Length: 461
Image (cartoon, rainbow, N blue to C red; front, side):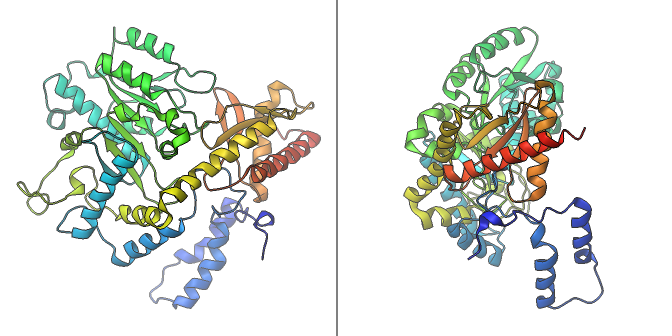
């Protein structure tokens, strides 16, 4: 049996090499080719260039191969190709989605009366959440945002969104798409462990309210760079006090709230007006699979659009498409349902514990390593670090770490990621699927060796 540790995560080919290999696949011709020939072409030309998310050394992003139970549902969903926008398109599909959402609301401890909808991605879930927040703000000012849009506000230029400096860039996408622009997004300072600085939030709100109208605050439970969890409970208290919509971006981290011993890190999510989550991350559910929850199911009424051929007025059948666009939507709930039923909650929790425990153990093992500078105290499955080398000055460190990262990625045997915390470059490992500290530390050791090689040859500036 081949040792995966000695195999490549992907081919390591350059973009031009990949393009050359894949070009024959899009050489469309009048006559088709046999299934066997097509299969051979895919195996030879495409598969080597795909990331092996199940490789133990894949520690760079939030991706995983489908969990075994999820494959059962995904196979059936593909075979029947159900659109689950409306009862008349798929009675079983729409009802299962509704039941799945209800069960998930209970599982996450959301309040009675909460609801949810499946989305294509966390980006779209965040976008809809901000739309709902603007709509809610408009209602406070006495008009229908769906009909009048931004011009209904007396001073739309005053509308601002507050969020962490480390919040996901999808919020910029969302605010652009809603016609506000990035100047209407105000980022807040973070504390030593990259969470929203609560004192600065309180001060900012007081200052900002003099010249702007805060329509939403976005907290993050598991930031992209460090996996840090904002203090949602305290932020929710502030939002309730000043009458502002609170959205929680839990795309990455929310899953960990299901683990009893981690639950206190997420206190307050039940008081958020909306929460996004991506089952396609830790749960290993096939993409696309994201969900937007709302605390009050009637909040989705702001999304309702009816027509004469579907979503007709007066019908009371399940219609998930009334809660979120688009009207053509995949049967995303099925693979999530089969995954949870196949594993059982106990095994789901074991799957979630494993990467967090591995990262925590690796963090503790590295505390006294003079070659490693740890950059965050892990709260989820992400660890950021820097490599210390006597040959490299602090001024050179950002370039040095970027070259180390490129050396690691180019060889293709380990996959880590590179990011910046403020202006400080860091390397990053992400544990999504079950793993152990030994595997993570092997990758760290490999990175240290690459760092020594880069330092010995000198930076290629």
